[in-house]
Image (cartoon, rainbow, N blue to C red; front, side, top):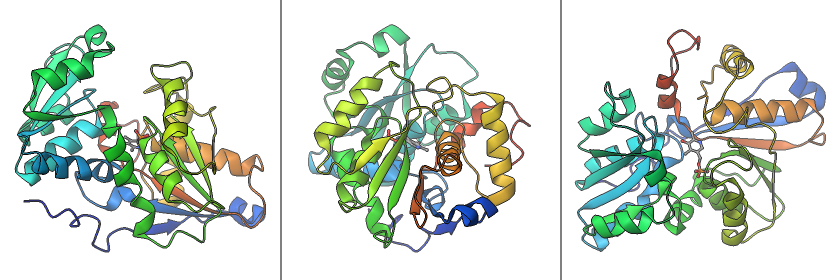
Length: 306
Ligand SMILES: *Cc1c(COP(=O)(O)O)cnc(C)c1O
């Protein structure tokens, strides 16, 4: 049986201060919460979003979790591993065709015991897919893509409790489904501002839903978005993003992933340069992990190992 406090109850969660001449000039202090370091496999925010789903699997005596994601999904890998650790099963419904060779992410997920099934993109994004899968796999607990939902939010509310976070004026995070951001908003104090960096573009798939979802599930209004840092949309990139990630690693020794945290740190640095923050601002950036996703990039593009 998995110890639910195992990953987060240890002292491996650290913050990492950024040192850069322009931070000193602007008198803006930035700490990075290194959730990428909590575990080698379930890194980042995914553990937080999954823990209450796993408790429900046990409480309702389900066989395991059935969930959805892409071929390089951090969520799919985290579900496969967490379910194995909890001694329950997992089924991953993967977007796209069943084409070999499988991605390293799917190979790992299968090695952890996940049963993988592919669905064409149209069926996958159909409105009734959640219902269909819940019915078809009634003995399993259906978990939405990315761990979205009340249990995901509840878990994400614990991120800021890891660490005395009340000294920060701003908390910045990447936004996929918005589940983590909602948890952060709910657990931040009303005088802290939570800034979300959506990694997808309006009106991308689900994008406007995200703002409604966050609005409906958050208990504070202390948040805002910076929507211009998506680099073309979800899983889109350009050479400037890759260059930034390599430079950022060279300067700070912090690896980032190109789907979420590369865009997040790019945005945060651009905002400092643009004078978005007042002098004396104390910022906490949530490094939400996801480094395994860099395996979708061609070798050599990144100058660091992640
Ligand atoms: C899944 C993920 C996110 C997005 O979290 P949401 O709760 O879906 O908004 C951000 N960063 C990383 C690294 C992720 O894997």
